[in-house]
Image 1: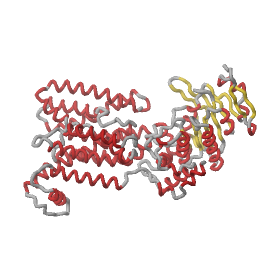
Image 2 (image 1 turned 180 degrees about the vertical axis):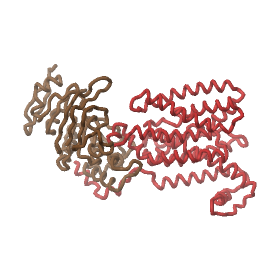
Image 3 (image 1 turned 30 degrees about the vertical axis):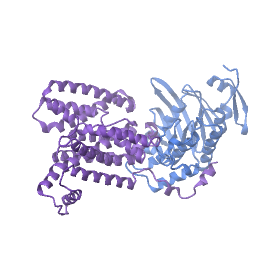
Image 4 (image 1 turned 45 degrees about the vertical axis):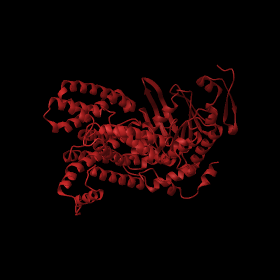
Length: 257
Length: 356
């Protein structure tokens, strides 16, 4: 479904990402975890193609290099960590931006584009917000609006960079449950970065642990979220317990380094 | 919780929310205002002509229409040879400057960007001063010199900005524009002091003048049409740019390319306006902001409404410039600033908190 081989990114003479491989099946959720500065966001941007990189990305068997930006945007949707939200734009107009890859360069949106956008808003419970300005929304509403824009792209692959940043517990759960439901309903492939290791282990099928721009571990949550791996790469003292569904729960332990 | 909100309004949501575009109502109001101001501009303080006579006369000028306005041939000549080109030139220049301002603001994602930011005015100021001082007998070449200077200034700023900043970042471009403007202004002042006897002509150009007649209207129209058309069709793209280059890229838009095209069109508009009217400040920054406050921030409505609003504003400013201290005339640039600044502040206060 989506395959990246030997992805490397150099920024300012530094290897931010070094020969990372990626292989995600259709309908799979891959969570990219790792300490700050490990290259998680860079990896997503490289896969998205908005960052200069070396290595090959193939989406649905099509090489990324051969794709025009518009074609690529129909295959991968991307929700950034800190999206630029034009405060004056209405929720509807913002979500409609997701239709950009389908609207001719100088054309205007069709009725179908508007219907799809309205449908996505309805699915995310945002219909009553459609005419509200983006600048007036709360953190949780914003996150859903950004997700709505990505879903309006109707791409089979969804890249989410820290979709739960700055959300409280309930809203974190709401957003991740939503992504999970959409993934099951539409067969979406999801690649997300997640700060919270327990959450990553709860929702993702596979974890990819990055450290210093390199891939250091990948596999099922129980195989990646182990005391030694987390302790070494996050420089943290943790206790890991088996949680619901055999998925590990990560606790910080007081008196660590 | 999600389900509750979703069922809140179950009617057809597509029919309820319309994408941001210029509403026909707003366009009509704008055009009606523009027409009224243009009629007033044609009247322009003349003693013996009634407004309805001007309307009839305008109708008479239209092709395939013949109406008797009751005006004497002399009065008709006055209207046609002096007033009409003046009003038209003011409208075209005002529309161009306002639209160019909106374009620059969209491209730079900076509400303070204006047509003079990128060295267009300074470039035009320099070449015009050189033309006036070094070739005092060549008055007709002034617009050409201004045009060359405006385009040259913008390209200089754009070249320096692109060379200095990777990925064509907007901040570097703006800084390059500021540097180019300062340098060119310094050179212009130097040249101007070399030819003190021409100072008056240089100043009258710097303060702006739309009294150039039909010749100037014909000169500016082709460029105006091209620039306005290119800017107008890029409204939706400028809305996409509002989410930043990276996200625009993720939506399949080549941001640098869009920016270059819009920049080119806005600079062409600025250069054309400067060439026929001199330096008229404040239109490019005030009008798009007023439009934004009144009709929302989408460039799909800001661009067309700025065109109409800028035209209206400058025709009105020219009318004031001609009548306030009649029979003498104020430079139009003084009026735009004198009227524009307080008006701008008033609109900012009135609509406080509704839009940025």
